[in-house]
Amino acid sequence: MVKHKVLSSAIILTVVLAYFLLLLAIAFYTARGATNESFFIGKKSSSWWLVAYGMIGTSLSGVTFMSVPGGVDKGHFTYMQIVLGYLLGYLVIAYVLLPLYYRLNLTSIYTYLQTRFGNTAYKTGASFFLISRTLGASIRIFLVLNVLQVFMLDGWGIPFAVTVFAILLMILLYTFKGGVKTIIWTDTLQTTFMILALIITVFIIKAELNTSLGDLYTGLQAKGYLQIFDTDWKSKGFFVKQILAGMFITITMTGLDQEMMQKNISVRTLGESQKNMVVFSVIVVFVNLLFLFLGGILYQYMAAKGIATPAHPDDVFPTIALQYLPPFAAVVFVVGLISALFPSADGAITALTSSFCIDILGLKERSDLNEDEKVKVRTRVHLGVAVVFLIAIVIFRYINEGSVITAILKIAGYTYGPLLGLFAFGMLTKQGVKDKLVPLVCVLSPILTFILDKYSVDIFWGYQMGFEVLLVNGLITFLGLLLISYKKQDAVTSV
Image (tube, rainbow, N blue to C red; front, side, top):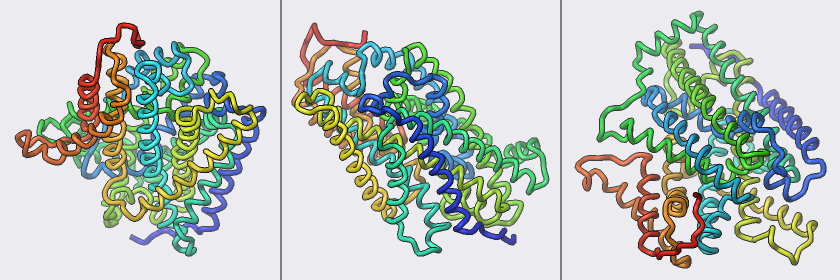
């Protein structure tokens, strides 16, 4: 098939800059009168419906935008198993975790660990969040920036490190002052553009193939793409494992994640925050179905036009959009792509800044610093976090192999597992723990989980561990805490 004329880099750059200027205008408006408190939790004045809608873009990110459609050929619609688990996880967050956070009036959710166990456990939990969110967000940002680099900026001879620096600088400029208050509004804009890009691309492909949505659906059935459930209990994709994995991934990556929760606890009341979570969870299911549908018709398009399938599944969507569909589709794709990029980066940088300032530096309790001095500390941390991201993203470009979504979920299994174990032990028992031994338990747990994962086929009669390493990791942490526990009748629990 003859390729369409490739969209010029100048047009792409103009689109990116126009988008950024729009974000900057929103930041200027929302950051008026900003303080550290509004930076961290938006002064608890956020509207629930605004948070719910904006969280869609944050939860989807560039991973969903490219990895989910690209994985349809081999995985079919089995990704929905994990999404159904997400739905269950969001309900647990709404009716178990959010009441706890609101009752304790937390700014950082890891303060709960200090109240329940002690200062060492608190610092340990916050540190695992910092590591996990840095790695996970870096991979998400890398995925999007790598597409911009390979398909556009390499032709200009721009080094990848310069691309990363420029994007992170843009994000710093519009999050530097407003923090969460700004991000809630920019996420809403970015969610809108991402979903519009998805829908418009579906209709462009329909027009290019001169067919109907019904015929496209029939084509998905004929290829077997609509298969959702994997019933092979030995398989990594076994539906019970996937649903449980999705549920616990959501509980940890959303419910025990400062980035996601700082938006939810910025809502005025618990009831509104729960409403936000339930509405958001239902919408996410349908949006993920739409992404899978897009993936299926992208493969139909390639088959109909005789286009060779890219070697890397994550390259399917950008290859078709930027090289084969009309130029307008390329503009739509770029807008959708950067809409997937910015929520992955801005929220992560802000959350990591908040967590480091509050949990590690104890900035809120520092009586030796006035408000202006605290703001200076926070801005220096903000810059430092961006530098760490820059280094991590550049490194990941040289070690990346396989699907990005698989890498993110795998990392989550090892880094969020100790957080799952800590919170579960705190909420399900009345035991105290030997606080200074908590870091040892939380470090040994991922190591033991890795060994079990590596040799699971030999140990468990051919059983392959998948994303449920998170659950195993959390369980090992829980048992480790039990070993260092003691009776403490006055321990604070969630009930």
